[in-house]
View 1: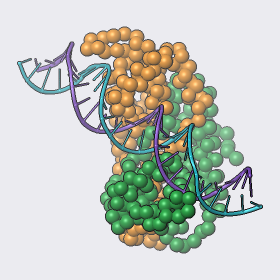
View 2 (view 1 turned 180 degrees about the horizontal axis):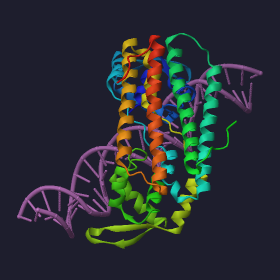
View 3 (view 1 turned 180 degrees about the vertical axis):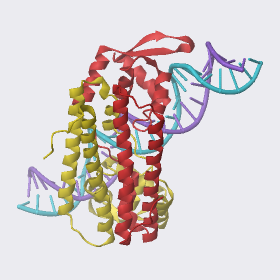
View 4 (view 1 turned 90 degrees about the horizontal axis):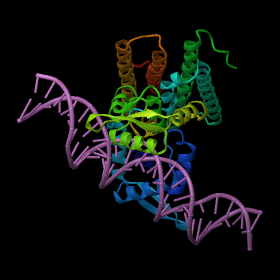
Length: 178
Length: 178
DNA sequence: GTACCCATGTAATCAGTTACATGATTCC
DNA sequence: GGAATCATGTAACTGATTACATGGGTAC
């Protein structure tokens, strides 16, 4: 049930239309909580029905600008401070590791090498993204940087782990990365 | 579509009933790919229809023992070696970080402190679990240890990150952990 | 006027969760 | 005989994805 809170969180920063929100989801929330267009419009409808958001204005082309209500803010606050995050589960990357014993050792090594590679690529993409984003001192960029740092640390950890795992299988160092 | 591959992977290690598989899911795959009873029985039915598994034997109480077929093995191999793992997305823990600017600084700090704490607890649970599990040299325990190591590194990373994030907000060290 | 973007909505399908329902066997 | 465990299945619902459908406004 986090999509509704993602929407509330975005609307807490100012009113927006479904279309606006969709772009925000695609750009800034894509790696954390992706949402499709149909899902978004559906959720906005439900949020309005339950009084957590309202249609603040209507524009051209049937545009509806949504704004968060006090009830919406209160629900957001409750979710932020009192609801424990659910543990991230379901990694098909890790699921495969459980079954690597079904492969030849070389195939298993290739798999782990690929995971290190993918993690390194993700790390590079994030680094590039970080450089392109303005580094300010305002609250939003502080928290943006914190979220970004998570991605960096996560991808670094995955790479180190996958390299360590290769060593476990070979008993020696994996080929040095670039 | 990974549940089917999880089932194939387990059956690749030997025939089992839905009930057997369910226990394995609850015990060893719970943190990687949880599955419910109804989901499992449904999937086994579908796998049988598509010829990836067969009912090898029927026992008392309507027990059906499933075995993987050559086609099933081939599908498993394909999934292991040629299908790229999907990126793990959707972390409501991280989603909240994007909206911490809606909270008072103290509330945000409490949130981050709690995330460090949860990560530390998870790390301890895994360490305890690791000690209780036999440490052999057979392929299964090698890969089991590799998967376990991922969990350890992930929780350590989360803890370090959450502590670092607190420092970003305070400009000083967070209180030393136990 | 036509291509592109803005803008919203619905329908079908799939994966996953929770709850309900039933019954056989084994252990004590 | 009663409780625990083995064992399978179905139904209702929620969340998410993909595809379909439509039309207004703007830039050139």
